[in-house]
Length: 319
Image (tube, rainbow, N blue to C red; front, side):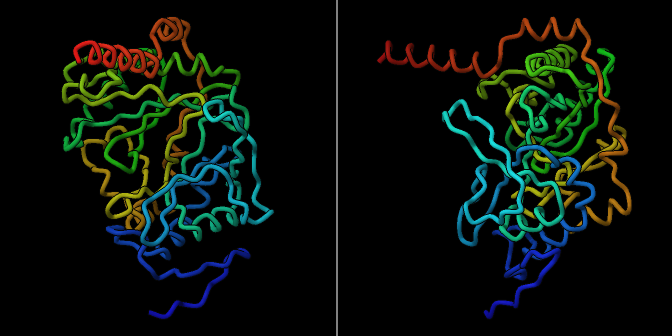
């Protein structure tokens, strides 16, 4: 099939727009570009000045995560260097601060947009995030029930959050933080909120990091802190039908599913609105009792690592 001639928007050449985005996408590259361009005034405020990781799909290949800006990227793309302790190297992330950069990424078949939870400085987190992850094959209504537990835990703590579909099978609940909140306190608060939600009804939700200990419950993931990323509001996802991470009113959670919001349907549902920004509470101070509780809760990944080592030693001993 002959290739269509390139188009240009904001000085960015857009190529091969009419090919399928990926297997099962039910969308073309043009659909991706048009969608991101149409929501740019909504998604760019969430991406601005945040080190950005993107998930890309090249034709006929598996998706891959891109953190370092490629050498062939235009010089006008703003970047920021962030030290990666795990790999002992500096990673040069893009800052997607304008339409031109967003269009360039779209033309590179960057489908998912995962900004950090901080702007420029690692020690300045802007959100507490709870990622609600249902067990495989579970009903979305189970996730909604878990989200209501988190909302109650927030209310009981004097905090207010917003909720959006993850664009996959779960939900993200986010609480904006006041300036001056440190990384350790944000991480501690995330652990404490998850623990409080679990205590409200442990038959629905769990904070167990190890999958075989979750017993079919919704996992309240409290590890999204520090250098972690989260799919931005309005970001497409590499899933069948190309769903997008979409803001939902708390009272409407029981009436939607993640599949309702795709690159083909989201714009019509949004109209002229920006529900993510409109529903976002003011930045909040974290209560002292919540921080005290959270600092006493071990970091889930560390606990899981030690448990994994313990199980390995036990297996070796039995063997």
